[in-house]
Length: 532
Image (tube, rainbow, N blue to C red; front, side, top):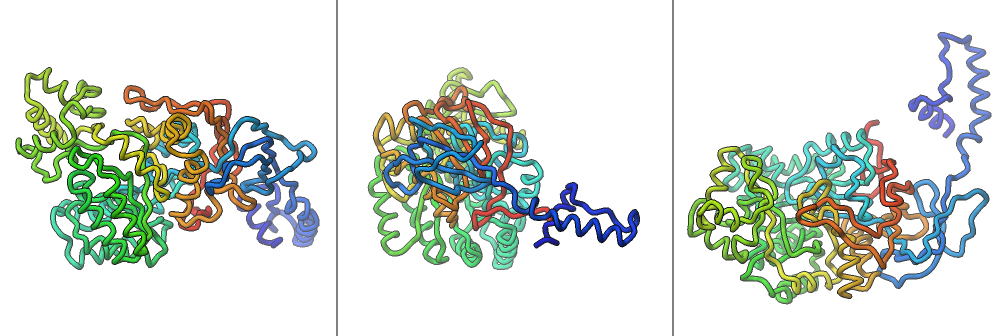
């Protein structure tokens, strides 16, 4: 133990580094070493740095009723809960009238690039998020270890974890020739890539089967890869093949993959996204609950908005983007061109903020012709428009949120163009808990904390108990609400008072503290040193 301590101290450049024999006679070096060893107890047994949160109403993450207690944090962990008194010179935070909860775990987040550009992640910590999981929808960083090292070197305010993306690996193997079923040899190459990613602390396999690269894959290809993830202790997270008219077929494929691969499944952003399936949440839920009764380990996440954010081409499932009949049907399916707003389009930024119907009227075109014009303009620039579509209904969202197996996730991230990126968690607590009474507060907190932790296999996060990591949020249940809008999607919420990540205060008094104690969390939910 002593030698290990000295070695680590020397590596970090502390004052414990002993001079070498080039500068001191060996006898003198031995004397110095003995002196250092004599001082070791002073270094190896430091007085714990602790903090006491008093008068808190605790939502412990399990769904249990709120209770009053004080909570002591030392270093990165919770070390005491109960009628605790402050120790001498121990700092305290008075949480009278406030709720203390585990930090929120966003299991579906798109901050891969955002965290590297903005490691403070203000829009995330401001809503109580302490951990973000990226690599969703089949699109992940690659190689996994390279991205994690970049995150470690950047030092983020948040904890992070990542999935390995199916489309990312598929394109690595098939390059631009992905518009077909993969051969057995190509699937084998993908399996090898996934095995590599799992060894680099990926949490499992993600797929985005509604998007171009993943959409050409067969069910057998996905089963083969899901089996590799399962063998390595991972899960399968999926944006299913269709969230519109063929939602039920896509759901059955997802369940089949889970059953055949014997893998836990995480259904991303559960929704019914077209007019033809609106109002069918009860039937959709029954399919899932029948599968759960058969033993399928099925959980889902949901964001609290009736709008989605994606790319223009996702609207046309048969991929006939310039076929007027296909386009007309696609627009009708989502309720018309007035429900589609352009939020990003580099070839013509003047389109941003306008609906497709507005643009068509200004150009004296039909809605269909305006859509086709956008496709052509995007193809010439090797890009496409980013859009927000309003095609879900509140009753379906409510039905999903009231199921115990549905958690809260944003599908947003740092600098997201949809208000969910800055408002998801406060919106649920303010709108769906306080105002609409869809959920009791303890259950909503469970959906933000222990349920995603359970899905990821993490035992020491997502709960308030002695020995758990001190990822914590203090908020005012009477004032918490989102303030992000479609016009101002990064506006910060109100009501979040304090946020701790690994025992370090990162958000206080409506601003970040500047500390960045986030770490990489793999399948165990515990950090490791990647650079050594």
